[in-house]
Image (cartoon, rainbow, N blue to C red):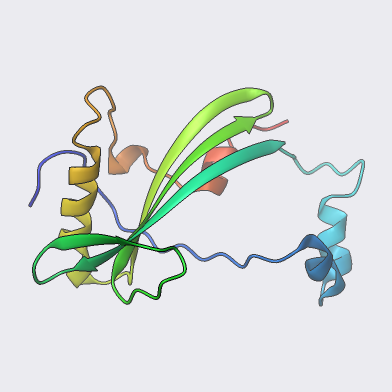
Length: 142
């Protein structure tokens, strides 16, 4: 097993859609109420700029090859570097996502991410401090 940061593979599910499409769908009125003026639900204002890279991983040879983001990859890794402004404060996030989420991907994922992070001398990254975007944003209650 590679040395370096401790890593965890997590599954991520996202349904991108335009807000108008969501609001027209089943339960649209309930969804709209989440963002209604005067609601007691916490809102966080976020502006983000992302850079995304995609790698095809060969788990047999341990090699990784960067591919275009639109290229189909049956086994791979996504890397996302994001500049964030949350409620007027600036942050940066770094995310890695393996697909598919299976046991054969763990070693290839760990090797690739460790190699990617080797140049970060002062970064203290660990699986214990890793969290989803929504959980991290939950720290910024307004």
